[in-house]
Length: 195
Image 1 (tube, rainbow, N blue to C red):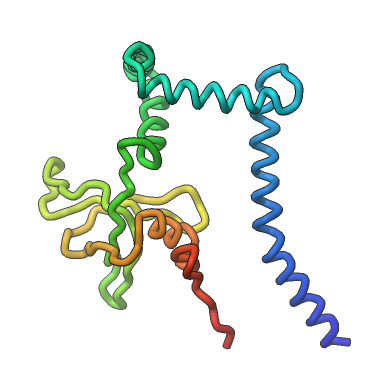
Image 2: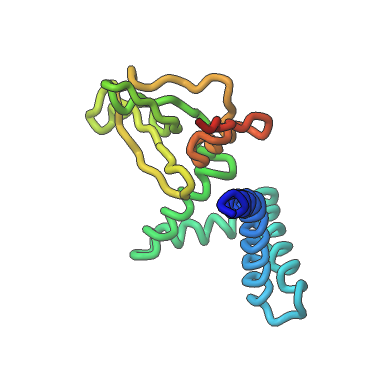
């Protein structure tokens, strides 16, 4: 009886591991779709298509045509100069541009020694190769993402404690960091061997 219960529990947990990512991904997509779809009082599905199309057209016009770029630059300038709003706007803008667009910042994956004895290395992204402007000579700024979270911290370390990541693209390095080191790339998933 105990063996049947253990088999049932193991099978249930394996099924949960298989289905949870699929179900959560589907749920998040459904929530995003539903929320976007309700922003406009249109028949179901039309609001979603309208909003996605509008954002895409604005993105195209804002980068391709002089008039569109001038309008968006005006609003950008206005929001960056408005007291109170400028802190929110500029922070969101910096975060968004760090991940997407022409000014991506997380393009240099590095290993950072965070402890000497025992030696501990963490994966991160070089964001400031020279901290001399803050009177911190021979220091660099490295962003260390947290595993399984959309957060992280910035550490300032001696440049000798940082070395480039070899054999991994920026996307693979981010995936490695965010997954807690379990996933490196689509082709390589770390298999944990049970004792």
